[in-house]
Amino acid sequence: MWDALLGRDPVPLPTDEERRELRRILGRRRLVWFWIVTVFPAVYLASLIPGVDDPFKVGYVWMVGLFAAAVWNGFFTLCPRCGEQFTGRWYRRNPWAQSCMNCGLPLRPPSPPAKPSR
Image 1 (cartoon, helix red, strand yellow):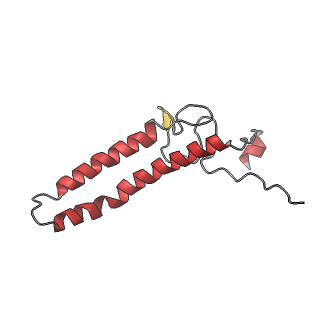
Image 2: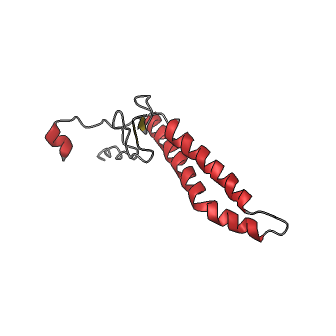
């Protein structure tokens, strides 16, 4: 609605190569969520293993993995269309942005229109 009022041009549909890169960005985000969701079960399972003196060491290693995945997602994810960081610039960053913070390429673009059958 605001785009129509402000006169912004709609973002063109992505190419197949751009769609492939957008799926990789989604995969990186899923990896971050994997680390977030599995930290407590991993520590709990480590506490059940006999001979493990400190199960929280597993938690520390898990947090390092979470940090690495979050940095990889936030700082090293480039937009396939404009080549800038997908999550924005250093002064305006959103690691969970649903579109490129620079060119507006949506992370989950609409499907191209179906060709009518004859």
